[in-house]
Length: 115
Image (cartoon, rainbow, N blue to C red):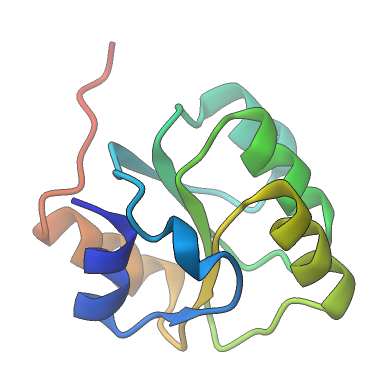
């Protein structure tokens, strides 16, 4: 499934890199602790977080994540959006909680078999 299909189905608001919505999503990761995401998220994951600062872009870029979804109706600051555009990291936002979004993604078949 692609980021675009997920964004359309779940009515996620795309804030950066709309041209990257054809990226495939291999799995998902939910965490607000950056070191946890660096250690645990896998390439192609969609990352669910409530963090808003620029460092989320660096972590997503480092792990080659498919994109970031910021939950709870929060909006990233302009510096974060600028860095995401420069690095080619899609950021989407939703009013859903992390719990609800993760459940919906799982129901849609976004799963990763542990290796």
